[in-house]
Amino acid sequence: DGGITQSPKYLFRKEGQNVTLSCEQNLNHDAMYWYRQDPGQGLRLIYYSQIVNDFQKGDIAEGYSVSREKKESFPLTVTSAQKNPTAFYLCATKPTDRGLSDTQYFGPGTRLTVL
Amino acid sequence: QKEVEQNSGPLSVPEGAIASLNCTYSDRGSQSFFWYRQYSGKSPELIMFIYSNGDKEDGRFTAQLNKASQYVSLLIRDSQPSDSATYLCAVSDSNYQLIWGAGTKLIIKP
Image (tube, rainbow over all chains, first blue to last red):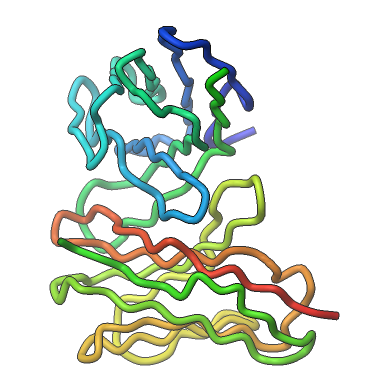
């Protein structure tokens, strides 16, 4: 079964904890993205990666970290420095990092709640 | 700052009527425009994309782009209750990254 998988679907974090959200794809897409969605707001870009072993900060990178050791995987760590992490986290991929064919495809998302 | 604006709604449309969703953007250099549908609690799914001025039709959906006026719209003909969702407009910037609107909530009334 092809596509983008995110795990877990629901995640609960205690104050002061670091948690890692998984994003895996078997679409052979080059670019991968992490977004955060809060109620009534558009998607906000946290980090993105256009190639293995390289990634760039998005608009709201503070309190988050990522790695891109394999083309298929782009995990996101929400650190204790992120003071308001409760949100819906979405991973997306894109076939190429340049050009007009820049449609992004989304995984099912992870809903993170701080207890 | 690059912005994409949408009316948050909700927009209520009778079943069978035409739903019209609008989006304006600030970056004149934008070249690619996308409409995504998002059901409550789910991730966005692509409906249509458009690159050129004018209309693009796909089944019951028509995207309209006017670069001079910096707006893009989505028309849904013969609206169905299953079309009830939030519709997100996204616009690519000069770095090919997407700038997202906050979405318009559409309600189709049977």
